[in-house]
Length: 227
Image (cartoon, rainbow, N blue to C red; front, side, top):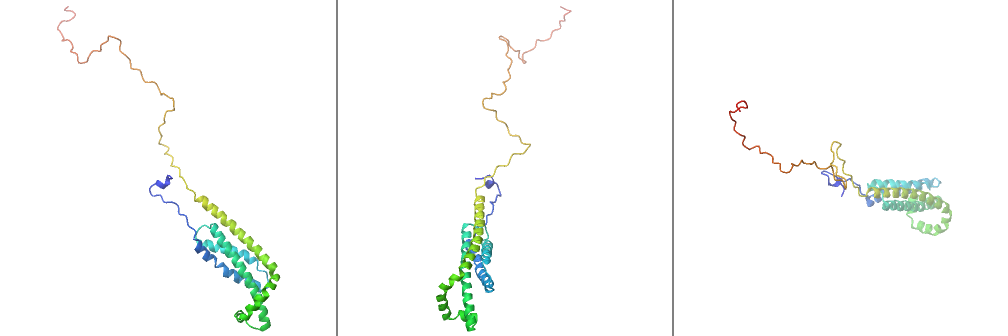
């Protein structure tokens, strides 16, 4: 037990706990936003692979905000899974968008009408395998940017997880040093006998010390001259 844990009024340091489920729900916000941005850029004819890089960091930021604590390895894999799922859904939605534009140009129907037609989806399922060859380059580029973003997320998360594990180690406090004016008694070293004891003088043999209570002889009137 540490010294501080027994001190009166001591409160242990507060360590926020990671809420994985709450963080995952917040990170899921990046999915529809990422798909929408992907389709917006895709509709202008540009490669939207850079969106994969932004989705990874957006999912990480949202996860941290929702988890309200340091991200762990579990949180890193949650963010990676959401990023990968967003890319797959966004890429598939881009292919659907191209098919809708083709049907709209040929039939003059609106996008909502085309998507709600059962015949459209049956036709789309038939042409999809052969059309995937035209999207291989875009798919590989999207996966490359997504891998770069996920690698940065995992590296940052693992560093934070290792730092959190190191800070959670038990801390043993050192007792405070005594004040400068307080001198602790020094113990004699082993084998040190100390200074010799003072010697008490001994009386010679046959000597009797007179008692202070002995009666003094009575004075007489004789003087040395009278003798």
